[in-house]
Image (cartoon, rainbow, N blue to C red):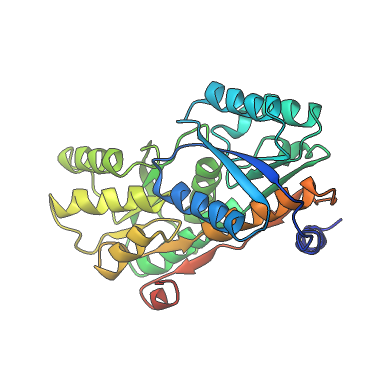
Length: 309
């Protein structure tokens, strides 16, 4: 089945009504991440307007073992479906085994499981956005912003190395910058864990060391904002291009204030809502397709009004 067909089939299956008293267990990577807060709000909003659905929500606190234990508790409590925002996509096999072994539908959201590459198990699904598109759109916008500069240089702020989104977004930026029509030299690349403060500290240390660059390309808006704060406290932004991903409220506010030049909209609310719809459909006996993709969209100062709500 093609990806388009799979997505269409999933959309059709999600039209099924909820069973009465559908219990859904939800485990999130972290409650402290601003983007994941939007995702969780989307999950809660969809559940609230779906008759008979109740949620049990847990915070994994960035701990793989804690998240597995939460899923095992959901299984023991006999929930009708489980939604997982995975801490580590490469460590999801035990989570999948726990749910499928008990015959409980399992929906991964936003952070893809390793099984997405090898084939999702029956009764499981993934709702998210193509990370290749996120990195490609971000890099394309940065290349355009740097056009005309001689031998432009960039630094990259990465999310955690165990997070597939961080790895894929970074790889797509690297591939774009290596093309002759872009040709941006990457002079530094380090992990700042999606974190604003860590990014600010990292960029400050680069500035103190005298590192020169024309662009800061961050895997998410929080790190881009931290980079902007570091520049504001040292040399000032000047003509340095700052790019992020997610188009969070804070990211859009930073763009409106001239602190960011590029972001890429990831529809966290839509992902959360679709995850609940898939879980409800599966709990009701519907067959769900293994993948459903919600597109990324580039955001610049020219079209930011379309994303400010």
